[in-house]
Image (cartoon, rainbow, N blue to C red; front, side, top):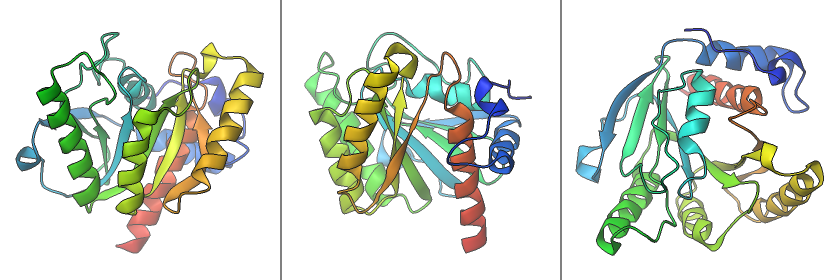
Amino acid sequence: MTVAATEDDATASTRYSHVEIEAGRRLFAGEWKFAGAAATAATLPPMAAMEVAFAGRSNVGKSSLINALTGRRGLARTSNRPGRTQELIFFVGPPDLVLVDLPGYGYAAAAKQKIAAWTALIHGYLRGRASLARVYLLVDARHGLKPADEAILATLGAAAVSHEVVLTKCDQVSAGELEDRSRTIRAEMQRRAAAFPDLIATSSRTGAGVAELRAAIAQLVREHANIR
C-alpha cells in the first residue's frame, strides 16, 4: 500500500535531506499489519526485529500517529475515550521493523488495580527489551510535559533507552506557542543523557512532521542494520 504524500514530503526538512525523507517514505510505503498484543510480560512476543515504541499520556494521539506514519487509517484503533489501549500492541511492516503502541498513562478514571498493571507492564517492557531501539515520547503540544511524564522519563534514563519527544496536535496551537513549548522541552531533554535533545512536531490531522518522523525511524533502521 502506498503512503499518501503530505506537504512535508514536498519540502526539505531542516534536519533531514530529500534523500532521507524519501528513504522514510519508502520504509513506510509497504504493507503493515497487526502482529499481536501483550497484556502481561509473560505474553510479550519473542524479540526479533528492531522495535520502535510510542509512549505518552492517555489520549495524546499515539494510535493516530501510527496510522499517519503507515498511511493506514484503521491500523491502530483510535478513540476519544482515554485509556482504551490497555495492552502493548505490535505492528509489523518491513522485515527489520516493529512498531509498538504502549498503553497510555496518567488516566485516573480506571480502576487502581488496572492502572497499576498497565504501569508495571510499560515500565517492565522499557527496562528489559533488548530489541527496543528508541522510544518516542508523545507530548500534547497544547499542554507540554506533565508530572505524569516524569516516571517514564526516569525509567528511560535509568535503563539508558534512547528516547525523543514528539509533539502531537501541533495544528491546535499557534506558531508562537509551539516555538515556546519546543524550546522548554528541548532544554529539559538536554539534561537527560539518554534523550535525543531535539524534538519532532507533528499533526496526524494535517500530516505536518510525519515525513520527518518517518525519516528518523528509517535512519534508526539503517544504523541498526550496520551494527548487526
